[in-house]
Image (cartoon, rainbow, N blue to C red; front, side, top):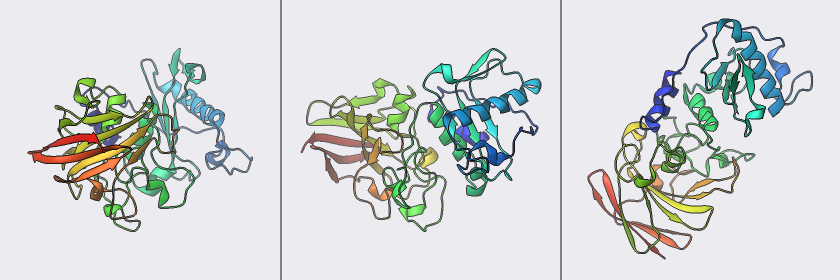
Length: 316
């Protein structure tokens, strides 16, 4: 949990104060783990639904209540025994508070249930940070319902809301590195008000010049955005070997498109450009002297200015 706490607080540039208040004991649920529908194949025929997930959370919270004060709690994290191998790790974030759960007169509308998939994958706090991203309102950026390696094709190694920890080099069979391109997208930080609008260059006249500072640092311009219409935009940001991007193989400028009409798992963010592996990794980052044209606009990296990049954006 300390890793997830440190990661999300770092991504927020100090705007988020995340504190875990643990209950250090196991609680016995009323049913065997397979009866809660997480696997989608329980003996009772239960399927994983919003209602079954909500009921599981409600029962767990009620069991904890005699030993835990829920007053002032904004979100709950429920951790299953690693031997409960049918359990996985979805987030609970209903659109309407009516569907929350109430305990001690406290309404809970945000929860993460951490299951055995976390232990099998060995991904530390990554699963918790990813699922807590959902409770903050962020969508899945990997593609649902496609065979490997296609789920990685939208964002590959970048960010925390894709399929966690793709392999080094964007290769299906490469070694894993949990710090490869993991800084949160500038777009997500702007959505969460962790990047201020004054730190976003909205380019609407062309050619436009922008000096981008690294997305991992607190000050400076974090993103250049070109609105395409009311729901689509081009976003450009600077990725350096800083923070959770420490191990990227190549520094450079990341170019992606955003479509706010897309649902979770369908490509709300798509990284643009050529890459050398099976999905986008640092090989996709633009270098000084390079230009990429997408959707009628082109972004040129004019020069590196220390850790910053000077860009020119024009109509192609």
